Length: 232
Ligand code: MN
Image (cartoon, rainbow, N blue to C red):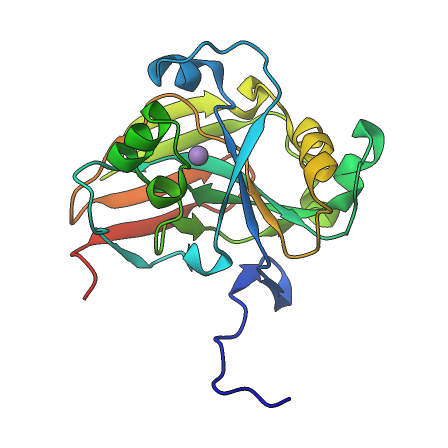
């Protein structure tokens, strides 16, 4: 059947050393995956199983983008994160096989309407309007694991206007990537094109129009975005 109108093509992410792009299918995000951040959010960092929320693929934007300051918030936050790009389908993966399903890794930001997220959290409602926000998932260049391996340690840093606001190590992840994929693939069949934002360290904070945001992770390419005026 022909369609009444055409939908936009899949968002396609650039890949280091590769002329073909990585088509983005779905976005899964891990909540509270660094103990210090769990504490700053007023939660106990006990090693509870990881929990997930999702964002639309179309929230992905790339290096150099101006992210519009979203509607209905006065507390728009940065969250610097390691992002896992899935390359192979799988359900109920074991820890041993999990990393075979990873295509690569990138720097990323899980931009959040913190006021709406916290309101939702305290009233037991879904986080969607706090988290699944237009242009809220900046993503850096994807580095294929085949070339650069699977990062287990290395500095992760968030800079706002050059100043370091978050600084941690990937070794501080409560649930490392393989464990995240064991849990996630127990809930859904993960698919090529899926992205997993793995959680943010302590030091989250609000941004204002004009701020320059930069996420650095050792061995990966930094991602830079600017906060712009509200979208039309
Ligand atoms: Mn996050």
